[in-house]
Amino acid sequence: MREIRVLLIEDHFLARMALHSVLSAHPQIKIVGEACDGASGLSMYRSLLPDVVVLDLRLPMISGFDLIVQLRQEFTSAHIVVLSNYSGSEDIYRAVRGGAMAYLTKDASGEQLLNAIESVHRGLRYFPHVALDRLAERTPAVELTPRETEVLGCITRGQSNREIADELGIAEKTVRIHVSSLLDKMGARDRTQATIYALQRGLVHLD
Image: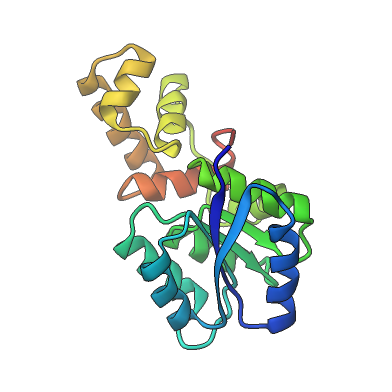
């Protein structure tokens, strides 16, 4: 397996050193940069283009929440792992809504952090059950048909309508109908919001 280039953005020196120690011990991971505030983190991302970013939410200069949004706007494929002291539903929701693909609290084990980085690097999301439980507190239940559930699972994996049609053996026009129905039922304006909803309610199983 090729190495995963990681950028750390954490304002507390000791926490950053602990992260460096845990991650650099893994043969597949290479720490390519470390930043102590959001502005420096954004600048370093632009110059280094890492595979995965691990960041705190409470950062000086640019907050972690705003940094996630800026990174995803400028680099749509940015793979972001949040590592925070906070486990409240609003923090998790804002991070996921902004574009974070994983959310861990700082009491997570080194193994969990490594799993999150490896999953996000593969384009998958990684949320421990406690994070999903917090997200589920924010949204009501929704009834989906079996086919809509299949389509939703494909959406959360980032597949296009054409790819979904090929995988499920249905017409692309039919996929568009299912996607429209899903968005309507969830009250979501786009696929990103639908993905967040799916994670919140446990409507799909993460790989």
